Image 1: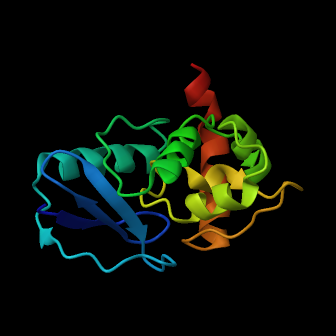
Image 2: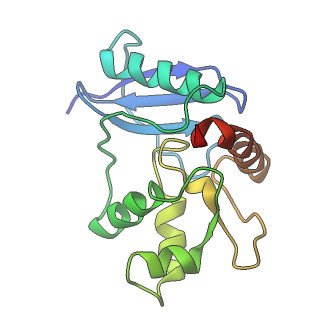
Image 3: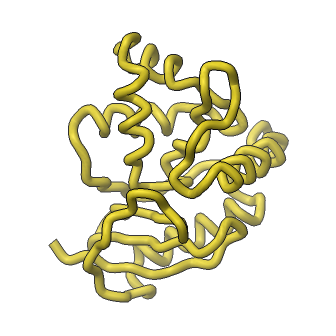
Length: 164
Protein backbone atom coordinates (compact mmCIF):
# COMPACT_ATOMS: atom_id res chain seq x y z
CA UNK A 1 0.00 0.00 0.00
CA UNK A 2 1.39 3.37 -1.00
CA UNK A 3 1.23 6.03 1.71
CA UNK A 4 1.42 9.76 1.09
CA UNK A 5 2.02 12.65 3.45
CA UNK A 6 2.00 16.37 3.97
CA UNK A 7 2.66 18.63 6.92
CA UNK A 8 0.16 21.27 7.99
CA UNK A 9 0.67 24.28 10.22
CA UNK A 10 -1.82 24.54 13.08
CA UNK A 11 -2.31 26.45 16.34
CA UNK A 12 -1.20 23.30 18.21
CA UNK A 13 1.96 22.89 16.13
CA UNK A 14 2.78 21.08 12.90
CA UNK A 15 0.52 18.17 11.98
CA UNK A 16 1.91 15.33 9.89
CA UNK A 17 -0.97 13.91 7.84
CA UNK A 18 -0.81 10.51 6.13
CA UNK A 19 -3.13 8.96 3.55
CA UNK A 20 -3.55 6.31 0.92
CA UNK A 21 -4.95 7.33 -2.47
CA UNK A 22 -8.45 7.48 -1.03
CA UNK A 23 -8.42 7.82 2.77
CA UNK A 24 -6.62 9.35 5.73
CA UNK A 25 -4.64 6.85 7.76
CA UNK A 26 -2.96 9.01 10.41
CA UNK A 27 -2.44 12.50 11.80
CA UNK A 28 0.38 13.02 14.26
CA UNK A 29 1.27 16.09 16.28
CA UNK A 30 4.85 17.32 16.40
CA UNK A 31 5.76 15.69 19.73
CA UNK A 32 3.30 12.82 19.45
CA UNK A 33 4.09 10.03 21.91
CA UNK A 34 4.29 6.57 20.34
CA UNK A 35 3.98 7.89 16.79
CA UNK A 36 5.38 5.27 14.45
CA UNK A 37 7.93 6.11 11.81
CA UNK A 38 5.95 5.80 8.59
CA UNK A 39 7.40 5.56 5.12
CA UNK A 40 5.51 7.96 2.88
CA UNK A 41 5.92 10.05 -0.24
CA UNK A 42 5.37 13.80 0.11
CA UNK A 43 2.29 14.59 -1.99
CA UNK A 44 0.36 17.60 -0.67
CA UNK A 45 -1.74 17.84 -3.84
CA UNK A 46 -3.38 14.42 -3.26
CA UNK A 47 -7.15 15.11 -3.12
CA UNK A 48 -7.68 13.46 0.28
CA UNK A 49 -4.76 15.42 1.76
CA UNK A 50 -6.10 18.65 0.25
CA UNK A 51 -9.53 17.92 1.78
CA UNK A 52 -7.92 17.20 5.16
CA UNK A 53 -5.96 20.46 4.96
CA UNK A 54 -9.09 22.46 4.13
CA UNK A 55 -11.22 20.87 6.84
CA UNK A 56 -8.54 21.16 9.53
CA UNK A 57 -7.95 24.82 8.62
CA UNK A 58 -11.72 25.43 8.87
CA UNK A 59 -11.83 23.65 12.25
CA UNK A 60 -8.99 25.75 13.63
CA UNK A 61 -10.57 28.92 12.21
CA UNK A 62 -13.79 28.11 14.07
CA UNK A 63 -15.72 27.47 10.86
CA UNK A 64 -16.10 23.66 11.13
CA UNK A 65 -17.44 21.53 13.97
CA UNK A 66 -17.19 18.06 12.40
CA UNK A 67 -15.13 16.31 9.75
CA UNK A 68 -16.28 14.58 6.59
CA UNK A 69 -13.26 12.64 5.43
CA UNK A 70 -12.71 9.01 4.43
CA UNK A 71 -10.74 7.31 7.22
CA UNK A 72 -8.75 4.05 7.20
CA UNK A 73 -6.73 3.88 10.42
CA UNK A 74 -4.73 0.71 11.04
CA UNK A 75 -5.68 -1.10 14.23
CA UNK A 76 -7.29 -4.08 15.89
CA UNK A 77 -11.04 -4.68 15.82
CA UNK A 78 -11.26 -3.52 19.46
CA UNK A 79 -9.33 -0.33 18.66
CA UNK A 80 -11.66 0.36 15.74
CA UNK A 81 -14.65 -0.05 18.08
CA UNK A 82 -13.16 2.49 20.49
CA UNK A 83 -12.18 4.91 17.72
CA UNK A 84 -15.69 4.74 16.24
CA UNK A 85 -17.13 5.52 19.69
CA UNK A 86 -14.78 8.50 20.06
CA UNK A 87 -16.44 10.05 17.01
CA UNK A 88 -19.76 9.83 18.86
CA UNK A 89 -18.63 12.10 21.71
CA UNK A 90 -20.34 15.44 21.03
CA UNK A 91 -18.32 18.57 20.41
CA UNK A 92 -17.59 20.45 23.62
CA UNK A 93 -18.37 17.40 25.80
CA UNK A 94 -15.96 15.11 27.60
CA UNK A 95 -16.45 11.48 28.61
CA UNK A 96 -14.42 9.49 31.10
CA UNK A 97 -12.66 6.29 30.06
CA UNK A 98 -15.29 4.43 32.12
CA UNK A 99 -18.13 6.20 30.22
CA UNK A 100 -16.49 5.27 26.94
CA UNK A 101 -16.11 1.64 28.05
CA UNK A 102 -19.80 1.49 29.03
CA UNK A 103 -20.75 3.11 25.72
CA UNK A 104 -19.15 0.26 23.77
CA UNK A 105 -20.71 -2.36 26.05
CA UNK A 106 -17.48 -3.21 27.88
CA UNK A 107 -18.09 -1.62 31.31
CA UNK A 108 -15.08 -3.27 32.94
CA UNK A 109 -12.65 -2.39 30.16
CA UNK A 110 -11.74 1.20 31.03
CA UNK A 111 -7.99 0.42 30.94
CA UNK A 112 -8.24 -1.33 27.58
CA UNK A 113 -10.30 1.59 26.28
CA UNK A 114 -7.60 3.95 27.55
CA UNK A 115 -4.94 1.96 25.74
CA UNK A 116 -6.91 2.01 22.47
CA UNK A 117 -7.58 5.72 22.94
CA UNK A 118 -3.85 6.37 23.37
CA UNK A 119 -3.13 4.58 20.09
CA UNK A 120 -5.64 6.58 18.05
CA UNK A 121 -3.72 7.45 14.87
CA UNK A 122 -6.14 10.18 13.74
CA UNK A 123 -5.63 12.96 16.27
CA UNK A 124 -8.20 15.74 16.28
CA UNK A 125 -10.43 14.15 13.62
CA UNK A 126 -11.08 11.14 15.87
CA UNK A 127 -11.41 13.21 19.05
CA UNK A 128 -9.51 11.22 21.67
CA UNK A 129 -8.83 14.56 23.38
CA UNK A 130 -12.46 14.50 24.59
CA UNK A 131 -11.70 11.66 27.02
CA UNK A 132 -10.77 12.60 30.59
CA UNK A 133 -10.26 10.91 33.93
CA UNK A 134 -13.24 9.81 36.02
CA UNK A 135 -12.74 12.87 38.22
CA UNK A 136 -12.95 15.12 35.14
CA UNK A 137 -9.24 15.97 35.19
CA UNK A 138 -7.23 16.04 32.02
CA UNK A 139 -5.15 12.92 31.73
CA UNK A 140 -2.39 12.08 29.29
CA UNK A 141 -2.60 12.97 25.65
CA UNK A 142 -0.20 11.83 22.94
CA UNK A 143 0.32 15.44 21.86
CA UNK A 144 0.73 16.64 25.45
CA UNK A 145 -1.83 17.80 28.03
CA UNK A 146 -1.47 21.50 27.05
CA UNK A 147 -2.55 20.61 23.49
CA UNK A 148 -5.48 18.59 24.86
CA UNK A 149 -6.54 21.55 26.98
CA UNK A 150 -6.26 23.92 24.00
CA UNK A 151 -8.40 21.62 21.82
CA UNK A 152 -11.11 21.30 24.50
CA UNK A 153 -11.21 25.07 25.05
CA UNK A 154 -11.32 25.66 21.28
CA UNK A 155 -14.25 23.27 20.94
CA UNK A 156 -16.14 24.97 23.77
CA UNK A 157 -15.79 28.21 21.83
CA UNK A 158 -17.20 26.43 18.77
CA UNK A 159 -20.37 25.31 20.56
CA UNK A 160 -22.52 28.28 19.47
CA UNK A 161 -21.68 27.51 15.81
CA UNK A 162 -22.51 23.84 16.34
CA UNK A 163 -25.96 24.69 17.73
CA UNK A 164 -26.96 26.95 14.81
